[in-house]
Length: 150
Image (tube, rainbow, N blue to C red):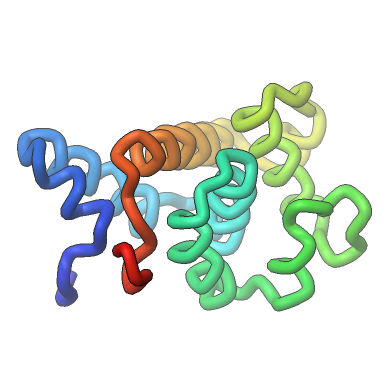
């Protein structure tokens, strides 16, 4: 990708046969999904919060900002229910992230109103993938890139 490998790639590189498929999935979610990038990044950031993944937040909060989320939205992700800065689609994504990551009740009506089957599948795979990545990062004790221990 035109840069040095990040610490996640270095950690997974110990199992090279698994690294390529994981990166293929991440790249497909990033570049080939039909759901708006800002909604996918919102999903990833909420999942990272729920999983306590500072590594994912360090990487994806800047991506969320680049995708069009503003500073008020970024600061309000954890308390999204009380924030007025999210639209209906964003609220559906945040609620679904909490379903996937924390077992909250799924709001089928909100999902069906805002997203078709393809988009719901993409959001599901995005959320589940980043839950898995957060857990891999934790299990492998991967440090944030550029940190003193990284």
